Length: 373
Image (cartoon, rainbow, N blue to C red; front, side):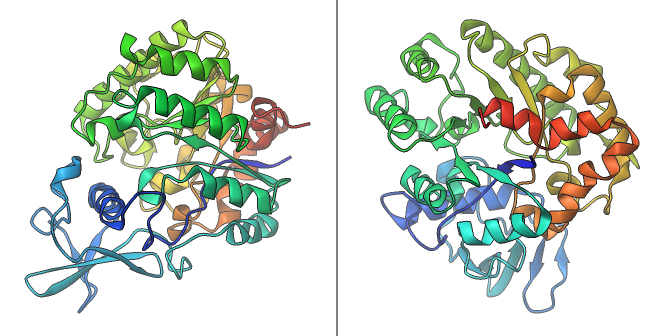
């Protein structure tokens, strides 16, 4: 079985996205898109703007930093805004996302063509927070899709009981197969990322009782490659290890991978020993996703053989039974086709890994984790 461990479906981004109003939803999009490494160009001549510091729709990773401008999800995967009469564009998604929505039918068509059997729908607030929407997507293709629940991280402490109720409902009634948790959406609202503190214990106790995996996205909000972010990544991994010791029965998936852009050195990638030491690899409940094309596709072309030594090293240190192939579709298709995303590991990965390792990474590990027969 080929299982994409990291995919998306999302409603029209000009709608409410599960929020109470479009303005709040738009702020989430504005800040997320502002922080992303995709380039900005001027609409009039399509020239890349190298210094975007003065025209960013949001100054920093903070909900109140969103500017009062005409920022909008426009069409064909692009976001647009104006500054001093000039229209600027960021092509965040591939142009094939025509109506700024990605329906389950779109995903299944790509899966059919690439030969992917199943996919797990991930969550992030700038693509909507509605659990019911994900439930509906899965109901269209119950044998091909599974979905993750999401509870707004910034509300958990103030609305603890309601957050627990929403979590339990999403898992037990909407049949979500795990929880997507994004710590940096606490700092987005000016709160400390103290998700491992005693005040969150009732929430995590309730989650552990549900017996589903936790998919946690690291608490950094940019991938612009500095030593500070490497130290931050190390601290996040150490924090996770401490949390896992409190909940030894919970399986945890570190999504996206290890912020691969931080480790690019010329035409190779080198993960610092500090990061390996920080990962809770001693625990059989720790899993790592491998999303190379979406984070490195603007640096290295297909088939991206530059990552093969790292793939081999990760396999040796962690094991194929805890490595998960994923894509971040549809965003990844701004660089690679969906089939290329699979072949990048499924075909070319065989240069450094055994057939059994490839089989596990590209589906076997997820099948076991998500208890698929």
